[in-house]
Length: 327
Image (cartoon, rainbow, N blue to C red; front, side, top):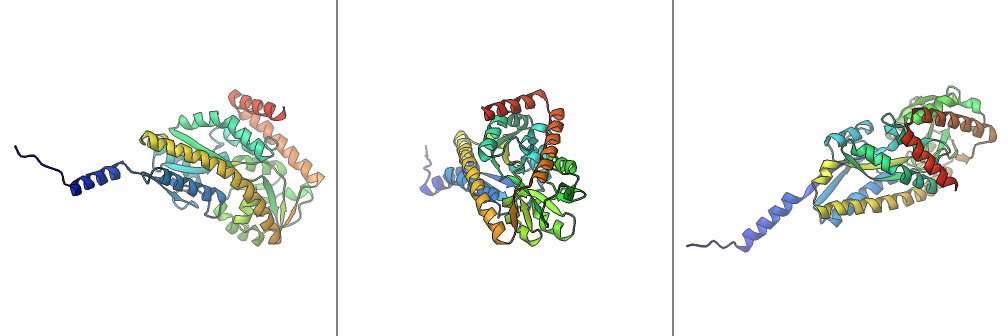
């Protein structure tokens, strides 16, 4: 009987085919540009995954809303059109009030408190994502939010009729309570919105002000420390389940490193961006007593509104967090 002996060339080809067959390629969308520290962190996460898996999982990051618009990222990941995405967590507030808890004034006023709030709310947020076939990987806070204007903000009456860029529903409510007119504008559209007169001011971080060269269209930044909102990075659960155990572990380990690295990047970017604003001629100040009182009153209304809409579970989670924070 004739016995066929596989040659080294055939064996090598077979091994190569097996490796190719097992390799996976994911598509990831983020609405933020390459200058954003969030995007830099996401790209490092993708590199870490590729390196840890020897290329068995490649994550192709599409930044700046170039592939999928911000509002369509989560639905696209849910459907499996793309495998991974990043969004501003509070843009999901129309689904559940827990998603906007990090945009409530006074709830978390420091990085330490913001991270504790994430830890407290992560279980319920993860469950909501799981119910839709997705899994959060990590979340990273933006620097605290302030107010950019082309004038010195020293009187609450200046908010009346002011067209303010507000990136989520909660910020829009906040602007309304101040007497302004909120305008929803994506980060990438900020320069155009100012140049065409669609907005007169914006509520955002030092980081966004720096990356969007805010000094081209405003002159003042009021460091109001309103809240520290987060971005969340998440994946399609079915795509994750198709990975072998070693690759799954590599993804989760890279995500843990991305979360730790991202929070430090946020701190560093806040410091560098604040300096950049001043170096480029923007006057940075804190609210005077009158403006601070108006911001507080609007914040109180915002919190009361949230309590009316939130279910008992969300309110209990927040209450437990605040209890631990105040101990």
